[in-house]
Length: 126
Image (cartoon, rainbow, N blue to C red; front, side):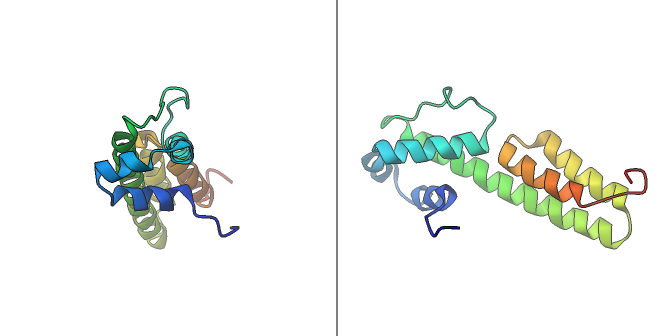
């Protein structure tokens, strides 16, 4: 990393602010950042989400909720899959990630889950 603040770090900082504070922050840079977050966390076309000063706080809250649920869900899937792997049940370990990917609304988290899944090789896959 180049030391620049990641948009998810910015999102978390914003989530702690009141709606009035968020409305005051809704400048061009903030709108670009929340659009980037939305592109990472949703399958919605970037043109579908048009952040404005009026809806900025709402979009911040919605994106933070998606980020939180995605992070939690992915973490739980990784832990559960790892438990199955330790028990030698690679089919069940793979299934955990497949189920997560089928229900996750975020390409960002699905990509991470696909990577985790690619590391679990069963005899049928070889």
